[in-house]
Image 1: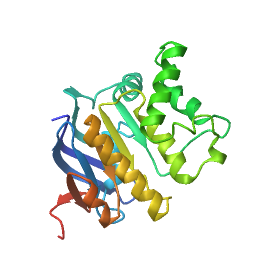
Image 2: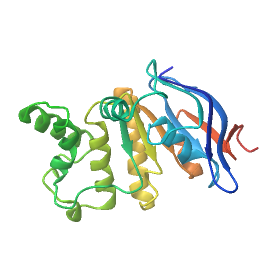
Image 3: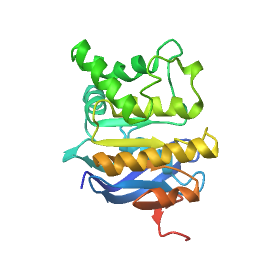
Length: 224
């Protein structure tokens, strides 16, 4: 298993505590394309944020690639995210003044590789997502679907063990959404990329290997 989750709990304190996750346990194998699905408020994004080290659970265990990440310091989490994890969100989060190439090679620069290497690697990744002819375009010169593909290339440029995608097609039209999902499926098939994606679209099931259904912070069988 590339991810093992054991009795994961997340409670948001307040006058009335909110139990977002209630002892969730499951595993994800290397090379799987998994969707986290469920109604709004079911705990999908909360779970993704725990797995991606973007938030800390109340209790439980998260083992990623053989490492228990629960007790990491903030510095350790930052280093682990940079080296092992990639992220794609609803918002493309591209800086308006950076070209596609500059946006993609930025994470590589942080690892200290040479300029020649990070330009070469970023160019190859943009070609892989079908943007080889758009590498010098700014975000304002690209469609929403193209911007999301830049964000995907940026997420993959460090060759992460796991790609996390939180509603990656929520801001896209149907055609662009299908393009992004087919790209995920191709990356999963061609390079064995492990992908965990939050989605609320039932049709997205056809693109993934497996669905984990959540309801009220608990994993449930489909339809219950």
